[in-house]
Length: 247
Image (tube, rainbow, N blue to C red):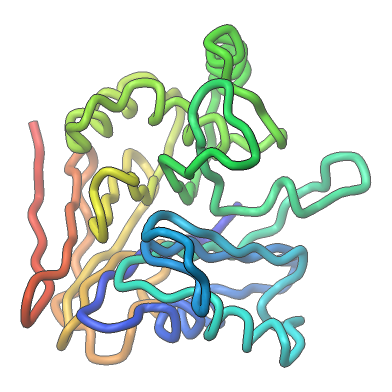
């Protein structure tokens, strides 16, 4: 099972995400990854959702991996995940989280529209996968999380809280999700049902994690996210705000 983290900050979030990955790392983990709303450093790419994944645990990183994580990605909102996954054939990288959706009939040049990390167990993934394939979504892995990413893209109509509430109703099993949408710049969403997530705030940052120890130093008032509530975190001038949305 994967361990997940999501953070928003008034400054570049990547160093805090890397520290969080180090806290999430456990014996047996063989993948880790980041997704950030921003742009790769020293590029002319537009602002958007960008990810970086490794087919190893963060404890097995080489110095170049650390440099890549700290230098190539820049942004104020991001997701991180560390986990133990089975390879797809002989390949492990396609399974690694975060997973993304570029929409139906996507090409290599299609922009990422949704980025997701997931903690839990999806019981109806095969039925959802087949339904999404019928809608021209292409799968690159056997991961439940890729199914969730495409599902979120398929039902998203510009209202992220409604999207997550609807998705929770379509997913069978205990799940915790961290999500970023391309049309909601620098906003980070989380929701859970049956899988604990802890969230809190600190000076210039706010976030949530499946493991409280992964939240940055200085995080106060760590609270369990109630089942079905959608947590919405976003930076603003001078700070970070949050809202809880529930039915």
